[in-house]
Length: 69
Image 1 (cartoon, rainbow, N blue to C red):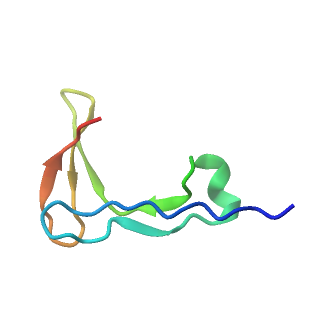
Image 2: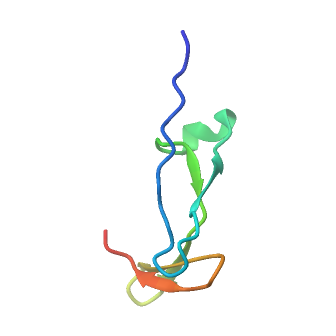
């Protein structure tokens, strides 16, 4: 059986337009991940009082934006 390659998602920084999708996750690590199997480059900013990630940060321009999910 031939395994299909997952489609590469598109996620861009709203400030600088940098591609926030990284390399594919190695097959041996995929049991710990959900499809599509790509590393996300965005950085989660965590609020201890709210006990959740509230914002994302771009690793390239360091711009931040609210998490909307």
